[in-house]
Image (cartoon, rainbow, N blue to C red; front, top):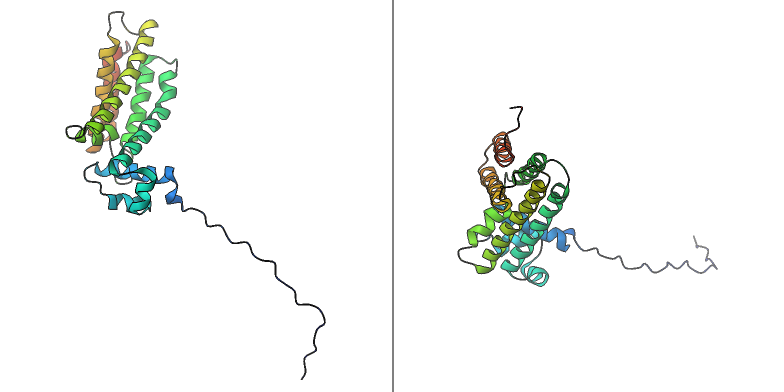
Length: 220
């Protein structure tokens, strides 16, 4: 059987635009840095290898170097990210006009939330658990740790000066020394959380620290 020949021109297909390949999510700087931070937070600086960072971020070594620099550079950027996240979570509490005792308990509650988090279990504080362990050997990381501790002390000192002006603390109280005491409570919460002290015990320590600074409530 002979097929009839069509006089109509064959329908031409419009050229298909090449599909754009999106960058894998792991290659987005914020995502990759968050994953690097998690690795450092879990394993510490010395025990973290570039191979581990590469596996966690989905980036090969040349890509890591190109995006962030060497291992120390990656750590510094991850630490800065941790600090910024802490500022964001604490800013409203430090800036609020609530009673001092309530502010302290909220600050410690947020800290405990951060310290007991982690896919592999409680991680404690990034500064206390990672930067301080390297401070003896590395002046750059030592400066990071010192600046992190100083920033917390200054934030507490401002809080206590404001409370003193409102009459919540005695005029003879030393805001700078109280700030170091409040920070020390933060540090012990971090260490104890890391070794899996139960949350209820951490909360009891936080409440005792607030009472020590503010004085025990009169109804107790």
